[in-house]
Length: 316
Image 1 (cartoon, rainbow, N blue to C red):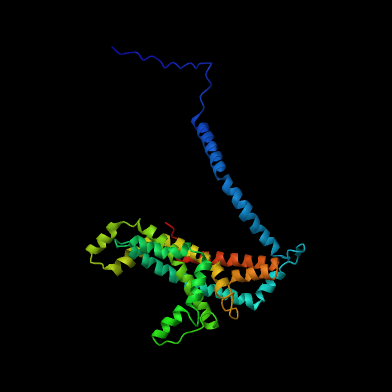
Image 2 (image 1 turned 120 degrees about the vertical axis):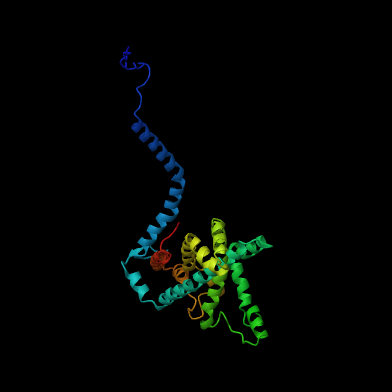
């Protein structure tokens, strides 16, 4: 005997209940609520960036086409400031000094920081103390550090010339000689930048799988082979980040130049940021300073792209 199937009877809706919302419409409504909540969360940061970054940047670009000295209203002069900059030998020297400073300080401090980070990532005694000692210059005021280095470079009573005299090497007027002033400033910049780079590399080393080193040891790899075959490739994302922030920091160097050399001797240590300072706050040429700032930004953009290409843009 075959059972007869009762036809499906549609469920009657309660007239007092609202009709059901389709799933797609409900999903869109939830996405809109989530997006609105996200915009509310980031609104303070967007307002802050717009007020203190975007508007000043646009104002700087606009002022770069004017003759403005604070006391009088800006007068439109077109590209005259840029033409004068490209014809100014001092700004050309400052640009070259900035490139040389960046070329030496960034790779040197990155290489030293990576080696120190690998060493301090081992189970060493006083490891925490050494990490703190290397990082301390990063959180110390640049002016205070520069004052210490002023004593180190002092030609009469400085520590450096005192050490050289012990081994029979004649001392130098490190910050007063145009040949030695820029290398001296480069030494200070490279030394001061080691701390933060070391800290970033140590943090990145925590994510390296120890089994990679164990497998390499089984294959007979020594410490140097492990460093170049495992450590360096695994630190590539961190290296890209360190490279970018190092380039930006090197192009913005100002404090130690101001204290150590004041841009001298004979403009041998004048940097682009120092020329912007002199144009704006010594000569009160705000239009010129704005144009120099725009060129500095463009150079930073170019150097960042070069740095990305150098690391093949591998961020993860």
